[in-house]
Image (tube, rainbow, N blue to C red; front, side):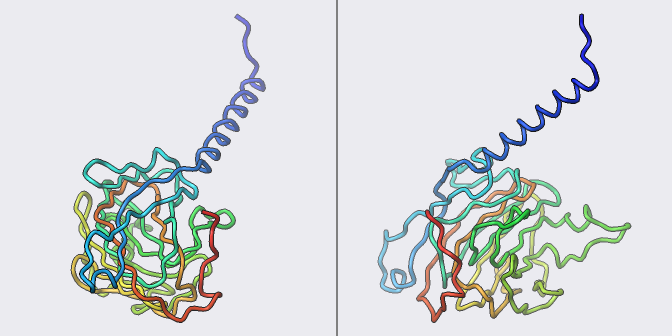
Length: 259
């Protein structure tokens, strides 16, 4: 049998690698959407109207279809790969968000972006907006530096502006805002976030108690983004209640996307 030279083997491996990278890039740009969660308005709730809820549609930004599955039980499963986001079909300004989530891997990383442009720039696979952090408790141990545990502040609902969006932290940890009490549960357990967002101010309740927030966000209308960031995470019972709009300038609104 004729032997293949080392150079030729290297060339073949290079070609295969290029094909794999191209395939992954194409998959991340594939157009897909799914429905998950509900939205309603404050006016409907106050007036007692029932049956007015509508389903929220999510659109791929830079992930893959296989990474997102809504089960018969209504639970959205994200596998965490590749890193990226899906976004809501429409933009939101003032609202109350309720969502429940659980990590399925120790040290899992994810989150939700509010008021986002849903359009990652440069080399970052993540967009701008205000990130509402969802980390699994063991993250601080897995990511210890020189044997020193990372601050527990990382995991229990940090909130901060990213991608050029600037916010004023209620409880500063640098530019980020940390919760005043760690209320998150660990792997396999459901956590509840209730998030009130009004006129550039965000207040976050973790498992039944308000513990964090930011104010003076430079962007206060935009898309929601659900984050895929390396680990399996489940979401359920996502609901958005839209509140009346505020006085918002064009500079404070994320650019509209085509769809």
